[in-house]
Image (cartoon, rainbow, N blue to C red):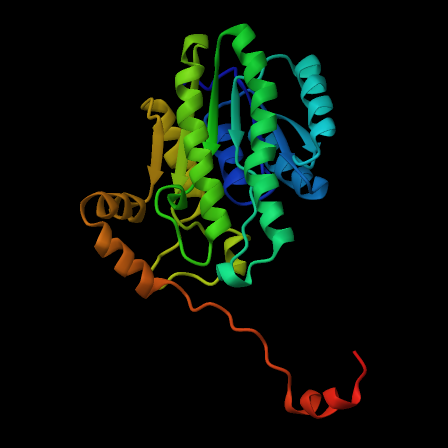
Length: 275
């Protein structure tokens, strides 16, 4: 994809991989970046960095789970800035727990942000791309879209779904000259990951490595972009020796958190309390 003179919209642009992709695209000469995330202040900070490079920016503080607001925002963006040539769906959330201790509100949030929010935004922009018969859509999945991770059941499910969604759109939208790409990074050192218990022996990569991998993959017309040697190794292991991969996952998975037991002092008080 030729970047110069193009307009890109990036979700999850206030931090992590989304921020790194925005900065990388600015470095290689994209004309304008539309930065979308929930935190306006962080978006302003990223926009200032990008404008110092010489790229135009527009920021949109938006919750992708709010369907009506997303519809309005896309219509306004198209009217104000014209065609969006590149959509990068990077917004996402992740919670880690054993499946038996998972909490429904967190499950619903992961599904709403990672999958439904992406689905709605993509449908709005893809229709406009189709009418102009050109565009590129990048959906950020994960290595967990190929290899499911214990303690990350819902997150893995959303990333598998994103990969299937991407594969289907690639075929459907090809007639409209729209490329649809899946980006699959392995564990990446972001704010979101720092709240998780890491799998043993897994070395996080940097967001900048992921961003550069995306640019290289787009230049090579890759339909799926696996980033990091660990991703390639895991996928090949799954194909050739799935039993070995399952064993490795069992060994490397962090222990599931146990339910907190009441303190001894609290135990003494409990018979005296009315519940």
